[in-house]
Image 1 (cartoon, rainbow, N blue to C red):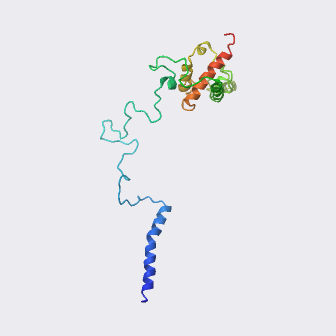
Image 2 (image 1 turned 30 degrees about the vertical axis):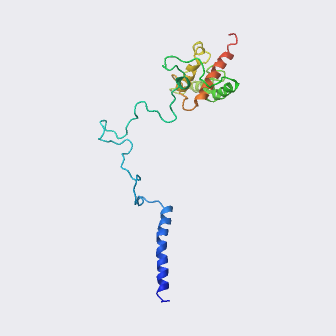
Image 3 (image 1 turned 90 degrees about the vertical axis):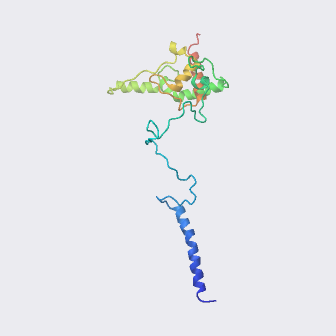
Length: 210
């Protein structure tokens, strides 16, 4: 064998390892440069950044508003009774529970648990508007905290509240009212109905003479 064959073989083997070494290094390191695209397909596209301008449209905005009536997937909420507590025209609150929701001991127990978490801090365990948040606010006022104002939470046993349809109670839980914040984002829809059922049961429990 000629003496030059062995060095040539070693050199060729070494050079053959270089591409693999470069690939291995590229897999474990970050680079500000884009990778090599032999076939670009749709990897790199020209687009406008969010909130940027675009002279193509009359309003000059690159971000286009949704088409009127667009509904996100999984968020149709087309049943006004179930999701808003109203009749389809939105003019009247319903006084019945949605189809498929059974008012039983399990639902009331669920409503009681959710009520104690989300409602009792202000409205109180018995619903008279005397929860711990209310007492803490009064204590702060009595300590002379400057600029402190507090509106007493509504008693759920007030005459006008006792006349609320169950759909209206659900609607208030969902969207809030006056100083009360909405809980539609924190409490799932069935749990809001469970709370509404428990509120009705709580009201009935305090009016045994009826």
